[in-house]
Length: 342
Image 1 (tube, rainbow, N blue to C red):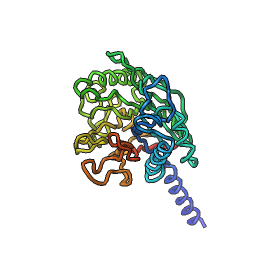
Image 2 (image 1 turned 180 degrees about the vertical axis):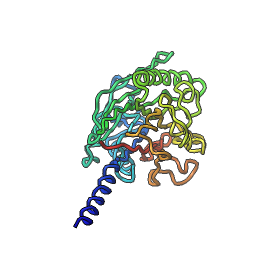
Image 3 (image 1 turned 60 degrees about the vertical axis):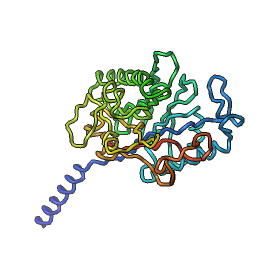
Image 4 (image 1 turned 30 degrees about the vertical axis):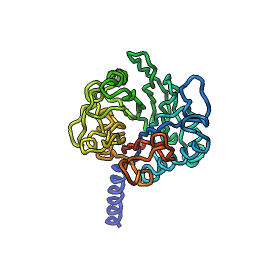
């Protein structure tokens, strides 16, 4: 009897040790996508949206909006092996209610919520964030104004502060830096200004807490090796396994960029304009960290152009002035993060 009791006790101790040593983790999918001119068909007198009206150059009707929303939903639903993203940063949205409509129509089974702010951009295209409110609590948003030397108004750097259910505080910055209109060289100072605005806020967070979790994502309109990102923002190229400095920024897109990957095809050249950049703690933190080599260009076959000089690129809504009824002219990017759930 004593032998059985001791044996049973030994088994219980072993099982208890195993259970106590096992941590439960969630795998989160954080993504970014330029939605390519998600406009409504109503004239906003304060914005230059004339081409996206029924009588405008794009002949932008409710039917075309509905097709656009359906196609966006198809891509978003396919993310994360069909489970959808945990966080999705979006750019080029005219008004929040377009995102509200997208979620109400196609994501009734998800408890997604939206963080959004109207920006001073002349065309009216703004940045927003869709997040899973079952696992994230929204604390606050902030809009960081980018004052260009020309005085021309552009998008905010949009900050969203969230708390994951395990108590981890996360700062997400949704970026859509000034475009390369007028030429890359001529427009460089504009993106340099956006980079300095983001860097200043990141420095503030890291000075307050060197272990701050920072995730900057979006359409930067520059590539990982351009000065605005590599020098002014200071986002380092990242290789899994390297020593991490919690006070530094690391570009998760850098490896695929070096391999020739990109999110936007321009004159036969792939440009890695859409990226995810994180603080060192987002790689090394035990409660919330990047899953190495999980950064991806999310390009399901159904959204890609099948032939011609744009083969392999995302099928856009318009090709020049021709309506194609596609998805977007940018390929989304995503990455997985491991988070202890308590």
